[in-house]
Length: 263
Length: 263
Image (cartoon, rainbow over the protein chains, first blue to last red):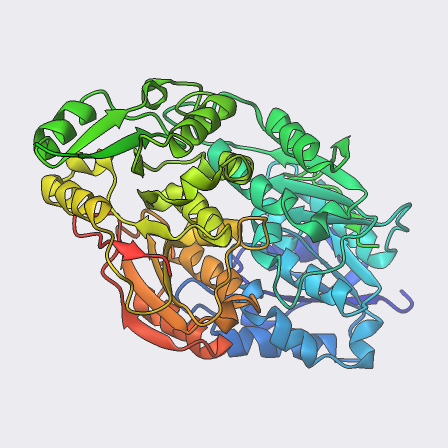
């Protein structure tokens, strides 16, 4: 079989459902060795184990020379609590690896790219295998871990809530000149509007090359109805803040979620 | 009856329910004249009329020498969309007035205080008369409009979501040396945690004298349960960010919501 890529999965946010490892391994066993760190299955309130154990697991696999890539297990909430301190503990070995995730894992992607890590990817995670069409998503993710795509331009991809929440913090990356893709899930239109006010009002964001709108789906019903679709909201805030609106991005909380290399 | 205080009510966020003016006027008619601007009853999607009409109503009453105080009708969402542009249109006459509101109106309170306005108050709004105990809240608010309390220290009071959303924008006020009171309503514990990560990670917030926790109620149930009460979450982020935790504040989305003068 030759030398296989060795991928480690850790869960910096919520606990990974028990069924996921077997399904993912069955799908990709001929292409890569995937190790699910036991931390993925810890549970501590909202999180996949206490902060220190989630941080330690990430630091352990990132600093392990036998591991080629670190794959974040799933989203939820919790990566932001450990991003700054975990990244501060990463050595030179960690810089040679590929990192892949999205949604709440965006806190880590942001901090890693800010810290100068070169192979930081937004894209599907192991837990996505439970979606309709999830096997294709996971397979696409493993392809990207085996051979990270080359970015054809400076770009980032973020969940809007995560992006809004990391602005002004120690893990805020440099947006200058970058195409900034955003996506959202399960947020009301008025909340999307409020977050776009916040995001597009930042001088740092106004230095981006432009904004691209991924899928924001579902948008829960609200009373009163907001009165505008999400793309109109995005166009409004781009126009108001003089940020070019660059059209739609092929990202979202779904099986079609594209791999986007931070660059 | 002598010279009465003249209070103008405008609605920079959501539409005011029709029943409110009669109830408020009945309660305070012997103490002040209250004028509800017709804009309060407009409706445009989510908002009490389009941005331009909400902005115009606020600018009109703020710049009117016959008006002594501007009272924001209710919360919801929308004040942030007009705060920067409305405040830029206010003249010297507007600076002599008292402004009162909370929740979404915090976007305006922040911007007004940043612009050097001296009588900016967090406190009950006309729509609060619909709460149990709401008449006492509205009466307390009118007392504060008649005679703004003197602040015994530098302080602000904000809804946590509003505070989080205005950071880094043109209406962010100076937090240095101030007691910063926060309150929340209807946000999950993980969202409160995420917002406190965002807020306490800001260098500008770390210059505050400390944080005081108002009421965060209700906190919707979540699965999994977050595992910590809101006060423990606030204490955690204060300790982590070296912001003094100064205890509880008597503010919240309720009839007991205290008047807090920005200072």
